[in-house]
Image (cartoon, rainbow, N blue to C red; front, side, top):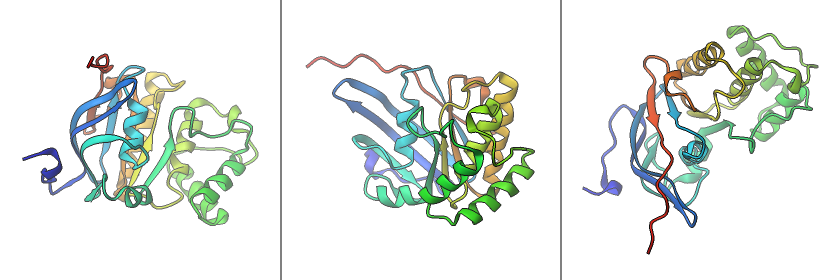
Amino acid sequence: MTAAEAVPEPDAFLEAQLLSLITKEGPVFRDLGFSVPRGGLAVVAGPSGSGRSALLLTLAGRMRGWTGALRVGGRDAARESRAVRRISSVARIDSMIDLEPQHTVGEAVTERALIDTVAPRSAAMIIHRSAREYGLRVDENTLIGRLPALDRAILTALLATVRAADLVVFDDADRGLDPAEQSTLMSVLAGLGEDFTTVVASTVHADAAPAGATLIPLTRPDSPEED
């Protein structure tokens, strides 16, 4: 049975086999295989240059050129990438997708609402409700750049939920956080699964994965093969 013919596991929301991304510069990640249940938390852990951001973009239907088998919510990600994008939400990817430090919290909410075609008032209500649930206290007039790193990370995660999504991807979960703060953030990300949202977060530290999470370890890929 080839990777393309692989049968998905019944309870898996994400199912990957021989998942690879190889560019002209060489491999980004290679021959990955994993399964993540619906509503589960997966932690992609690896050093800088191991392809964490690229893998998250692949899972969210926003990366081209990969090979292997990938199913997202029962969809063949190779043939139904547009559908995968519709059911996924990107919270943060490296510095490419992130909150603008010079925006206020209120402006960040409005911007996310417009991106996700959600009424700004509805988005604000969702964020206020979620913030109370997770103990996040921020003023709408506070600049994003002045928020503590943990508060900013939690807000980033919550903003990815203003539009209902089956999958949320969150890059660099360790950015600016000490181990205790990263543990708090992981608890918030895991909590999003209570609404059957599957979350995939990346970090340098494999030991940041909480109990019950699916660990997807990455290493720096081999050098490009010579012809």
